[in-house]
Each structure stands twice: as C-alpha cells, then as structure tokens.
Image (cartoon, rainbow, N blue to C red; front, side):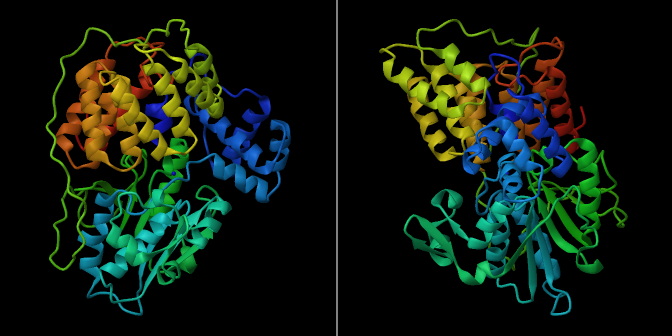
Amino acid sequence: MTHAWELMAAPRPMRPAGFTDPAFAALADLAHLLAGLVFPPNRQPSAEAGMRRAMSTLRIASPAALLRAAEAPGDARDVILAELTVGESYFFRDAAQLNILATDILPKRVGQYGAHRPLRMWSAGCASGEEAYTLAIMLREHEWPHPAKILGTDVALPRLRAARKAQYTRWALRGVSEARIARWFRINGKSMDLDATIRDAVVFRPLNLVHDDYASDEGGSAGYDLVLCRNVMIYFDLDTVARIATKLLATLHEDGWLVLGASDPPLTHLVPCEAVMTSAGMAYRRPGRAAAIARVVPRQPETIRWQPPAITPVTPRAVQPPVNIRIAAPAPPSSLGEDDIADAYARADYPSVELKAIVALEAAGTGSDTARLWILYIRAVANQGRLAEAGELCARALDTHPLDAELHYLHATLLAQAGWHADAATAARRAIYLDRDFVMAHLLLGDALTRTGETRGAVVAFRNTLVLLNGARPDATVRAADGVPPSRLRQIAELRLQAIGAGT
C-alpha cells in the first residue's frame, strides 16, 4: 500500500507542490471526508497522478467531471479511492513481522484453541489479498490443527474484487521460493492462480477504517489474535490515526497483537497501549495487562518449522557533525532538457517524464552526465507502479554512474519497497559513503536497520539525521526530500527513535 516513497524518495520539485486544478484540490478534500485521507504538499503530485489515472480508467475528460463522479457512491468513487492509495503488495511481505505468528501466536495457542474458539486474524487494508492469503498459507504450512478465520478488508472495492479472484503475477511473488510457488499456485499463462483451498480460507469485505464501526466485530466476539494494519496509517493525520488505533486495539483478544508497518507513526504517544519490542520491530497489545511495557525478543519455538529469511549483519558507522545542512542547489540548464523533464515530474506527468527521458538519454553523447536524467526516469517509472522495471533501470544507471550518491539512495529506496531491507541498508550506506551529509540516506538507513532488527545501528542513523538537521534554516531544501521541511524530517527521526525506545 511509501508509504515512505513519496516522503523519502521523490526528487525535489522544480516548483512548489500543489494541485494544478481546483477540482483536484476539492477531490482531495472529498477523499478526506470519505476516507480520512490527507495529502500534504509533498504528496499532492502523486495524489494528482492517481486522480489522472482514475480519469483514464473511467474515461472522464476533465477534473471537474471526475469530482462530480466521486460525489455519488458507485464504481467511479471506488476507482478514485483505489488510485489515491498505494495498493501494491506481495506475498510474505515483511517476513520478520510475520514471524510473530510463528514465534508467539501459534505456539501459545496450539493447546488452547478448538472448534469453540477459532484462531482469528485480520488483514486491515488488505489491497488485493496477498497479505491475507499469506496468513492462510502459513497456517497450512504449520499444520494448524484447529479452525481459523481470516478476514481481509479494504476501502477500495476494485482491490477486493481482485483479491477474491486470486490471480497474481510473478511480481506479487518476488522473493517467494519456487518450491512454495509450485505448492500453492498454478501457472495459467502469465498469471499465477492461487490454490482453491487457500482462496476459500479467507473472507474479504469492504470496510472504511475511519467511519465504519468495527470495534465489536461480529457482535462482540472473542476478538482477534492478530491484526495486521501495515502501511495504512501513513495516509491519515495523527488524530485519525489515534481514533483508528483505539478501535483496532479494542478488536484484539486479551493477548492479541496489532502490527503496523515500519513507516506508520508509532502509537505509544497517541493511544493507551502496550508496546512490545520484538525481533521484528514494534508491535502493540491492548492496555491493562499485568506487564506494563514489555521489551522482549520472542524465542523461536522448536515446534514451528518456518523460519524468516536470514539477515545479513551490518555494522553502524557514525558521521561527524557538519557545520550546516547540505542544501541542494538548482540544477544548471542542460542541453539534455533536464529542466523541462523535471518540470513535468513536478506536475506528476510521469508518462511524459518517461518518454522525454528516454529521448534525452538516447541523444546524450558519450561522457555526458546523465545521472539526473536517470533519476527522473527511474522515479517516473516507479511512481507508475512498475517497481521491478524501476529496479532494473536503476541497476543500469549505476553501471554508468557508480559514484552518484542519489542513485544509490534511489536503489536503496526501491529495495526497501520490495521488502529487501538488509540490501536496502547496504545501498544506503553506499550513498552515505559517497556523501556523508546525505540526510535522507541516513533516515532511510535507520528505517532499514529497524526492519532488520539492528536497533543499535538504527539509533546511530537516526541520531546522525538529527545532527545533520541541527541548525538548518526553516526554509532549507533538503536533498531528495521532495520539499519536506527540515522540521518535519527532524520530527520523523525523533519519532523513530522513540519507537525503538532510544529517545533523542
């Protein structure tokens, strides 16, 4: 479903972010009213790109007509809401987080549950079903002996229809072993059809996390053992996050777990809850249990055969405090048309960026500095949802420009989006090696190390971020931050430190 992408990966716009038509701004307000979505300046270009995709899908010619179509319930509104949030997911995403199921939930409940109390799990914001079906596959692979109920919900009906269809591409199975694919999928031309028994193990239904009543799901039943709501909270303001989190926690069984994504805001300062630091990062439980705030690493029980992927050890490297933050200077005029392409990117006209960049790269002579063109080209492809292609293009660009720090940072961002956090940390370190003052690379490194369980390294990275931001002017432009001001970046780093129990 950026998550840190818009925040940490997009290049600095060449002009202030904003909607190009008043109808788009009104549509953003309507999306906030309907689904709680918020679009700060750094996310407005990507939001407008989603609105324009909805116009193309619905064959609507003008922003004003799109706004009128969204004002009434129906297919048009569903398509628009789907385009305004990132619905991209894949199977066995964030395997370390899923390990909570293997290390705590299943072992503790094998002897407790039976037909009277089925295991209950909920994928909130399930996109096209990959996460919910992953849970079903894990239960089958663990030979779970009791009944289980798995629910997937999303606000976007087109995604739920895709989830029920259960046909996926290879991209949705990236990182999944061939043996696992052969066991649970059938190749059908270019699609991979999920096993019918897994498909039938999950129930999907629409649910609006902001407005719907779900705190007493199914008439006040025993509650959920696991709620996954990953990379969903990033679309809401903090007041809305607090309201949703309160309701999610209320749906849990007394020893159930709530797991958010690493990019989601931490809950400890927003709602009453118990935060548990696991080997996979922070998880949450209902308040009021015997222990106040536990900070434990679950052990791997012998009865569970599934293991998370191996994590490559990394060693944090501190940086010396700089005198001032590094400010990105405007790119000089270029015969390669970089200014025109950057302007198209600022308008979120990603297809035009892609076409113009291809022409410019083909016209570039030997020895030309094309790194900026490659960065705009790769980001445009990624922002159109073609992450695998963006990764391949980034590898090609690094062959030509191996010493460009921003290309390495972009590579790290794409790796993080694909869930390969150890590799993302390595790529972020390369960017920092080439430019020790690269604020966004330090911030991304901290996120990647948090996801791999390297807490000490993450603390160093987040504190380096704060050191680099110290003394920055309020109007400073931070490289690769897409116009996000230093004060907001400082707040993000401080929240990350609080989430891992390090403070500032």
